[in-house]
Length: 242
Image 1 (tube, helix red, strand yellow):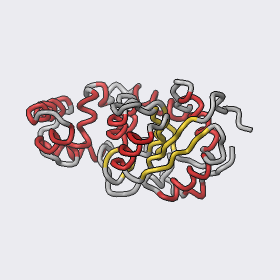
Image 2: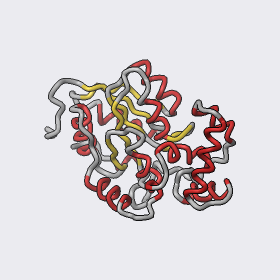
Image 3: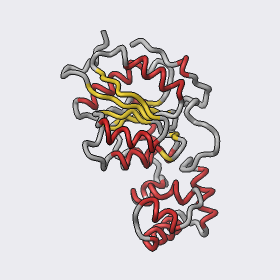
């Protein structure tokens, strides 16, 4: 019996993950736990958002490398739906961009994909169901190291600017970004100029290169099958027993 059992009855969990292998592993894992009511999974952000609005899960297990957008932008959208779920990120991403945007995105916890994650997942669900956060020691250590840097970019950029960088890094125009996030084109242009100035960059192509280097923008390679050390990780490596 695992020690971190949820005492107050089943908690509903929905999984947003584009890797079918990982989705299958998680589905089989959660089906073994009586304190979890597994509602299913979605392979894209758009589908996941629609299903969360419909099913109203208490907790969403969220991957970041989704085929139709950035997982942390989806996290922001999920915070504003009726009956918003608590968000537990389950991802291999541990880059500076993820660490910088983690707390502003409103997630309640993060677990890195790695072998033998079952115990950490169960503890995380218990913590979130009780209204607490869950960031294991390895994640907290990475956050401390990142935030201790005197030149950390998150210290000079606002939360709104950090959330805009993935869109700016993709080369979208002010008008395209304004339509995506529902603000005025002039507002986007103002933020773009502010970001360039704060980062001592001169042109949008410079910002695009910076965003790529800092992993705000995908390099075109799937990240979800890599663990913290960049090693290949298949779902066979994720053990199902506590």
